[in-house]
Amino acid sequence: MIRINLLPHREEKRKQRRQQFFVVSALMVAMGAAVGLLGHTYMAGNIERQERKNAIFESEIASLDKEIAEINRLREQIDALVARKQVIESLQGNRAEAVHVFNELVRRMPEGVYLRGLKQTGTRVALSGYAQSNSRVSHLMRGLDESPQLELPDLVEVKSAIKEDRRLSDFTLNINIERAKTVDGEGAPK
Image (cartoon, rainbow, N blue to C red; front, side, top):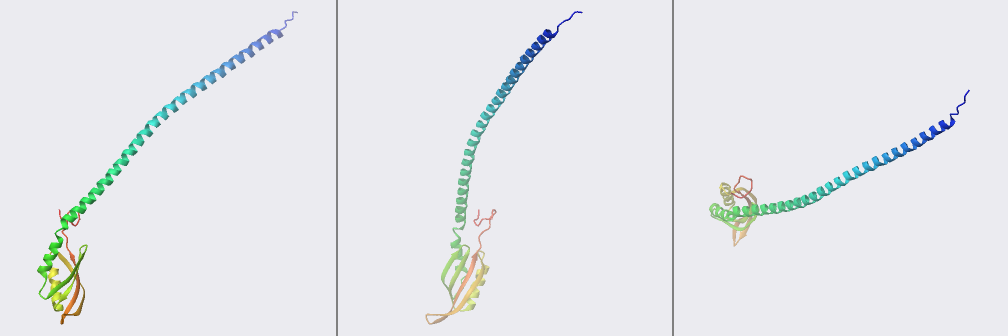
């Protein structure tokens, strides 16, 4: 019988398979590294591109913030100008108010009543004076109540006083000025 020694052949095959395994493993490691490097390069490119876009957005946001600040400053100036305009319109509409008040007081003042003081606070006018009698004070109040520019006469006090050897009624009363109503609710006529 012929004996064939297969051990060297097997050993040779094992060596080839081992060599083939190492070559394939090295190729796989190289391919894995190449894929990893390619993936890293691709992701780094995407990140860099996104950072450039973010930088552009940030610069645009900063310029828009400056524009918004400018718009807010302009709005504040506009509001201040509108407030000034309203004050001027109010003054314009109420500038003849004192003349009308004095005119109505002269018209409605009965004989025997003398004013010694007049003080205006807003739309409220405080009158103080002397009258020959209490009935003259009530006649004054009725006359003021009938006035189209004056309203709500309110007697604060009446007391007896002696002035130049004459007995008089010292009175204090308040009246309101009726301002013309406008469409926008302000006190000045348009």
